[in-house]
Image (cartoon, rainbow over all chains, first blue to last red; front, side, top):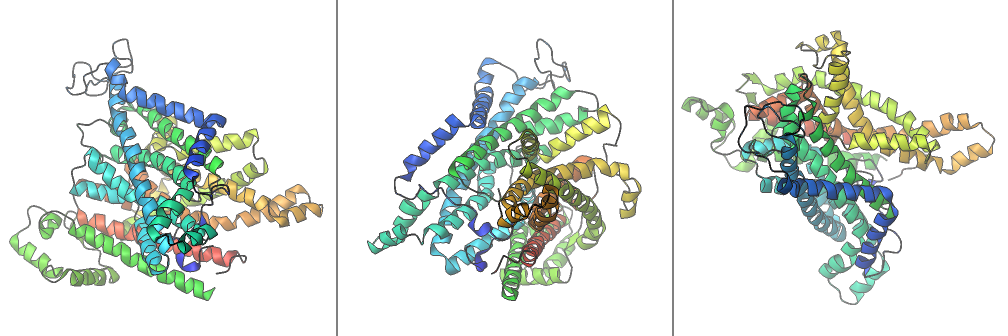
Length: 312
Length: 314
């Protein structure tokens, strides 16, 4: 337990110490064993392999696909709208005559780019924030954690819709904004672990030998939270893809000129009654596949690092 | 215990203040002239002057925040020039409908998640458990609107069982007069919430199963059935409190999307429409309410948990 004043708001009591790293991760040089553990997870866990394979396939589909399967996704072709799947259009066309298969390739690029970039930002910010909060404790911790509580209390989608009214969303801006609000979960988790780690003997030993705060945080505390970090980072990708898909569907993501899976669904849903399934379901399946794949990997890593995440 | 409750309440007050501060800053992040962006492009100079005076826009920022808080405490969430209506009265009309939607979904998902979680824990790592985990996994990985689309396709388009639109009556009672229109929105939100609960419930039940008192109960020769009902299920009910706390942001976000998909008139749909028309007072009003509800929900869940589980001492 981390002391009552530091209890996080959601998730109930007990979440102050959400994560515990595996026991053998206590010596320096953990980075190496973490990499080995990740590799072993993939070799031993079938679901993780499936997840990774799905992600590789989808990434190849989105980024290499357009090189092979050439379609015009800029100029509407009003002579061939809402066509079903056929030889010349493998997955049919939408209400503007755009080829669905080609559009799925282009539309997925932003999802994958945003997913990875946001996870990277969220993880780095979260680690630093959490480690500083946990390490310095006391007033610093109280203030920093209340800030996290406040940010947790305003649902992301509401914030994003508001932000999209002020700024014209671009890919870079979406990444920065999503990154800036996604670090909360890693921050809480890393803080919890830091609180538990900083009282260990080796941290005291470093201090006795004259090691400064920065050295302790970067060389000793952060490497020892690697397990939690890797696991949350994986789930962050899944979450970012989901949030992005929701914003795109609601029309508050990228401008209409840039197709995305979410906006394709929003566009096609009008024609669901007419039975034009190809305008909705392929994009929907791709979103779910991507998210499931990342969640598979996250779950497998979570098992092998023996990390317990109460909330994601 | 009293100390814990007091500290926890103190924290909640601080966080609520933080939420209002964020909303206040969001208001001031609006580009250009504040009065013009709120009243609209056709605001007369006179209206702008009145607005500036009312919100004390010439005074220092901290004083403006103070005025903003003062207005909030007196239940004044601003005025929607777009709808010509105070935001408070708008929300007073919409929130009961959200309560029905969210409340039904919460009760139903708890009613599903608790027994399913217990059954999965008892039969863990067998076929049934894997199926349950798999279903939870897919539901968890689906955007809310995708779930809604699948349900609409199945129950409204392929088989004409339920309407694809929520009841369009503007009164709260009218909502209950056409229950068939409520089925799909409530079902969507229930599944979304269930997806959050299912994984938590299963591991909580597995943890309870490993407790000494379960083993003791089994050792005394109690039939397995009684152990399950009297000890496992009852103790698992404690986690309901935690689940409710966890579910609040999920339900609130889910409500926004469900309302948009099913054209269900409520605070979420008001927020969406306000975003389309740049009706900032409505957006900020909804944000403040949503934030405060989340903080209060978590507060109640934390205190309820401490009251229910005597093993927890602070």
